[in-house]
Amino acid sequence: DAGVIQSPRHEVTEMGQEVTLRCKPISGHNSLFWYRQTMMRGLELLIYFNNNVPIDDSGMPEDRFSAKMPNASFSTLKIQPSEPRDSAVYFCASSLRGAGSEQYFGPGTRLTVT
Amino acid sequence: GDSVTQMEGPVTLSEEAFLTINCTYTATGYPSLFWYVQYPGEGLQLLLKATKADDKGSNKGFEATYRKETTSFHLEKGSVQVSDSAVYFCAPGSGNTGKLIFGQGTTLQVKP
Image (cartoon, rainbow over all chains, first blue to last red; front, side):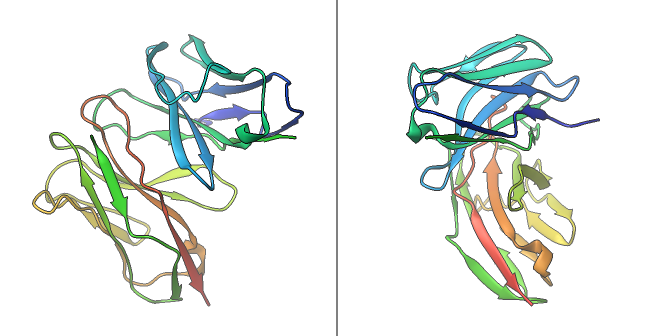
């Protein structure tokens, strides 16, 4: 299995631009998680999906952030408009739903907003 | 709410030293417990897990035992190597949601 795939691996954009991050979970997994990691705030859960349905988006920082999961093999995280404080590494993870299920992380997308 | 506390880093050790990274948690019920490791520039990788009281998870020489009575899951390794230098995260599961509660991470630096 290829593991969780994220693209792009690096993104540099100017403030005000739209940014779209992409994730392909492990085949057969039915839960998907988006995290953000910064030095100041550590690892934060932004949103997670079960069976393509958003379950908890309480970690989404503000309305500029949105996430979708149109099917079991693809999810996007969009930031519009982007701001310098959005600079971080964004991770996607997937798991088989259940309290004892481990999550498998992608390599992350390093976003820099100038 | 559910939470986890890890010892603050960085932890700096010489090669072949003994490692302990403390982790305690508060959670409803009896969550599964995980340790993840993050090497520089990479995503988090599952290091080991334990799913019930007194279980011992182990991998790559690392061990951790699920201690229900003290709500702890301390990570240990008998002899660390330079290649173990990384950030280690303790993560209990949260109820039956499938979510994990991540600690702030503990940076381990191993010097030759």
